[in-house]
Length: 504
Ligand code: NAD
Image (cartoon, rainbow, N blue to C red):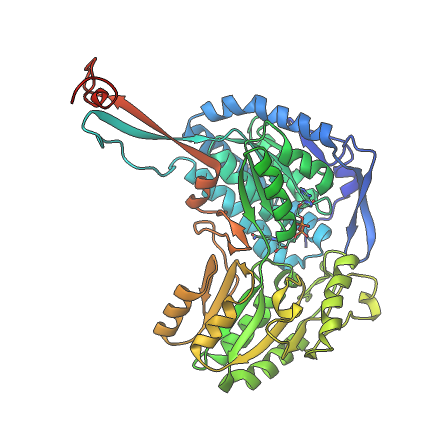
């Protein structure tokens, strides 16, 4: 059982972490953090304003030259020490993540927290091996080599669904590569980002390398994106906000990295292991109460398996135990807020006019009525062009449709604006090989849906954004490449000068 602590005491100084110190935001506005399982306020703090963002960027700017000048081994050692401090504080992270998001303990304990800490260990190692091409005489007269350099100060903005993992995915490749960072977590979920930065300081990572500003998107968020000293904006969140951020960042010619919404298809061919597909669909759709950008949201099932799949998923969804995130035996917690729960319910209620709600479609009563709970929901026969199939619902809701030919299954899978993740289910290596080639998404799972690992990239196609989180590929986002060309001839009159003056 995790040890609870009083978040109001722990964050008594405020929800900003600037230049190695906790501080209060300068905005006149305050924000509540609410336990979504009870609807009760657990903490209230002053939001950051543009002046706080500026102070954080200045701190990051001051810290950057020295951090960039550290050898890769020094940065790596500091990050390994950070990983060790984090591991000692595991229980605190599990508690705080479950409290602010309503995640069942087992999800925080076995997925969010260890996954994020493994990211730290991975990037501690990767810091020593940034990829590049070998130096060489590509022109006979010069030696060329490539320097991989940090960009400077990174401004990152993260969502509420996986606050710790998103902080890790943004902060780690940036600092491993010698940048410093200002991260704005979602104003609903500040705790674990603050604790992540604080643990870095305990481990000896210098003040100013990692700063957290917790403010509203339109206020602190836009100030961070527009700040002239920020070299790059890295954003994870909705496609709508991502478009706004792209506009703002483009105006100041900033590099951008966008990890946006998803609407992952789950394609079941008629030779699939039905039991595996049913279990995979329920786990893939309900993880984190469906508030997962890669969650299975659209099942397409080849006609011979369709009815058995629908009844298997409905039965299994009915067995899933909603409950107090901190109670043993809870499978699924609440959604992030009552407001978001009502948004999810709105999609399902509207779907009743054009589709069949097979199971779920309501908030539970009784002890759970005060929390932002919603029952696992399966919607059958929603037309492909309906909002339930096309738009990101971001709740425990799966749609299911039949298909006939393999071509049709893949066409339907590709038929939304999104392209973050997908899965294909079949025992036939040629079918799965084709699906992995033809489905336009940044990740395609075969006979599974959801697992991620530090060594492999995560990122979208199409309206799901561009750029990669995790893995060595993320260094492409957080570094810039400089070509250095050395003359090796020592000639005062170079051969190529003929093209500008003198005869050939
Ligand atoms: P959101 O887009 O509403 O907010 C994300 C962040 O942006 C928050 O910190 C918010 O304060 C900030 N923000 C809002 N308006 C802003 C503005 N005008 N300028 C600057 N910042 C602004 O998303 P959310 O509701 O917090 O999270 C859910 C979304 O995140 C879903 O769409 C989900 O798919 C997406 N997501 C994507 C990935 C991925 O890897 N692709 C991962 C997790 C979540």
